[in-house]
Length: 120
Image (tube, rainbow, N blue to C red; front, top):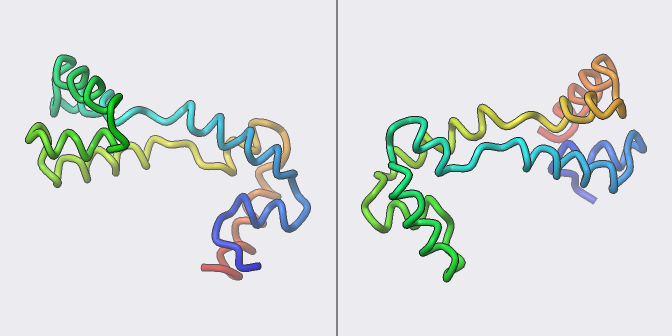
């Protein structure tokens, strides 16, 4: 099995369970700022524009950013900037696992090093 993600690596090594990774990923998702929230904070969209996009999104499978660009409310470069900000603010899985006391910082750092040496 080829491992592409750090969480898979940790499960494969026996450091955490699949269920613990899912719990950590859920925490990560809940701590990740929404694109609309970031766009408002960066003065790229108004609350009214975000609400319009959300209403339209409810009836489609399109992503928020995709609709914002389609409606001409965001340029591609603005969406890229927002997604970069979102990535920068998202807590790392390893940080969350330390908070959950499933790993200590030394083990996390060593496992990250092993992961990157082996798979990156």
